[in-house]
Length: 80
Image (cartoon, rainbow, N blue to C red; front, side, top):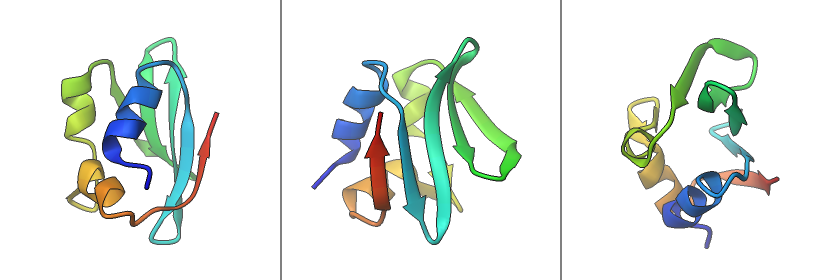
């Protein structure tokens, strides 16, 4: 199982990810402003973060990303 700790390690080592949760596609990527968590086709709600503390509190629909990953609720995970 790919856990939140695996995700955190990958993100902060410079990797990027895409995944599906509840039929919506999300990504975490790097930009010059920091790392960006976004829902595809809805850039109005992009979240820019630069440290692990901010990463720990990312959420989708009031559910922590940490819980979603640790409960294996994602589909089609792609790691770049």
